[in-house]
Length: 577
Image (cartoon, rainbow, N blue to C red; front, top):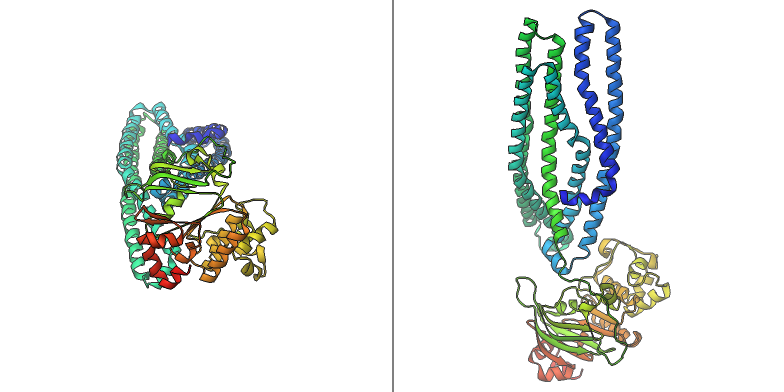
């Protein structure tokens, strides 16, 4: 947790005033038993009502002042803890956005969401308790011990023994409960993962009538979380009973021996009552400490998980910047002996080399898992090549700044992702100041203008998260239009027309060819009809380059491409391309 203290540097005032106010309140609280003893021994015993009222008024004044200081501390704790949580959350979100796809794949979306919400909430609570109680509770314990010594050193020994025993209980339980809380957070990640899969894939689950098996999977995960939580809860539940037993035993001892001292005339009744009050204060302070142990144990586990994200270094680092070549003869994209592999999964691509000239259309085709999406993801540097070199406009992609590189690339991924807001807001992702006319043109090229115009709100139509209130084909066409609005020099369509019918797909390819002002286009698809008219077709097979050329050339020379063609088209259709 100490590693996160940098997020508290703007709250030094609250971190000073809050504990100081609690300290003053604790001092007032320690004075109350002495005033009570004075009232009993000098007011009640002698029947001096005026003295009782005088000292009683002083107690009320101390209580009111203590309340005032407590409220100031509470406000300071709220400002610091909420501000701390906001800063950590913002910093974590910012850091996550610097991570490459490799790190995001490794950490996992459900785990990151849990760390952003649940873990940081626990850290916020720990900061609030740090300001409000961490100073006050130990001070009350130490202060009560000292005040008891001023009354009777012999009786104070009981206090010391009780404090030591309670401290041992706290240490043992804290030491044994930390591993449980760490495991609990991991189990919570699993529950979040299953919940997310169930909610996002609900239609598929229902289509296969897998509700019961999915419920069983969730129940098993939830029960595993429950078992760990119960074990941690049982340990934590021992804190209050054990501290109560030790403290009450100490109070009994104080009353037992104190009664003898009063009977012998060595001590006054008020002093014994003051000692009992101090013992009660120690008990209450230790209960607070026991609860703090649980809070800080949880926070420690959460801090470790948050720091794990902060410690994750992106494997893809930003370049220093490069000036792209203006020469029209410089290739738009060049792959030189490129190989790439996901961690622990071998090579997804092996020794890929090709050149794509400016204004050309490249089709990429291959079987499932052949490496098509992996290849195009190397161009905007979502991943870095393990071997070889990827160049854009004649410059290695590693030399570009991310924004500089990606501002020239319009990327349309396999999964059509839209965001909550209007269609107009979604279209302006690539160009913030895009006019309605520019959006209209992009929609027309993407074959989306017609269905948008049929909507009563048109561009003001509000989309739900993920665009779930649209069909799959409509979402794909809008994501293509969104990429076109930015007028990229290189457009990558990663199987982004899979939900379109053949007529719409053909109209889209025709519009891209005729109305994009010699835009370089890469089209990834498993359909021969989508890539057959491309200037070049790149055929992948098991991560290797099986062939490159035009449709007719590959049909004659590439066995893999011929098999794909004949599996989708009749021989006459292939030759009449």
